[in-house]
Length: 216
Image (cartoon, rainbow, N blue to C red; front, top):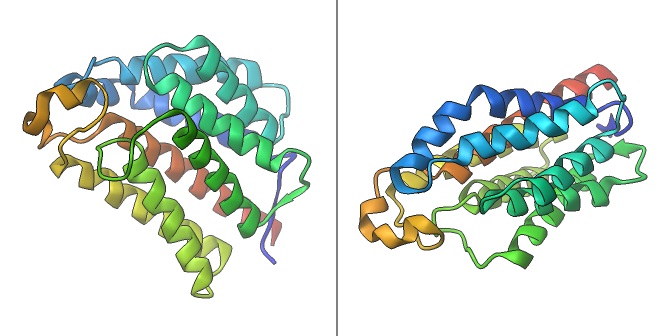
């Protein structure tokens, strides 16, 4: 069975932070076309603050995700702080105390994060939000496992689905948030939340694959 260690995987969150910070301007540019234009700035601020608290403390993946989620939920404004905050805190809670993360636990972790988002928001798939990346990514991961694919192969499927979901938001009409006031004028622009979600999921999957390979 393919697994990777929870205890030595907090660095995954540091790599997520690097990716968000690197794309800060891009995410804000996208958001500025139909939203407040602060998505990249707020995300980069939150991930930077969390990274400063994680770096040098040899945290587990659970500990690092909890730190990130707490910062985003309690210290970052906007609509995305609470959504991502709950997602990461729920993910952390699911794997807390687990020594090894296998495909089943990884799926449960993401499903718990998704449940957290849906518990505080009304958005559905097709509303032009981060759910349009997260939901198909999780479905693809579970589908690959059901088809007999390995953990690593399922992670590849997750990334492909997340990016396809992100791209699908370009032709959607925003139905929640500030962008919903634009109606059909929101068509033609990627959703910033779906874009940041795809970036985060890609780092998570890529790093998890590397840890699986190192452990085998």
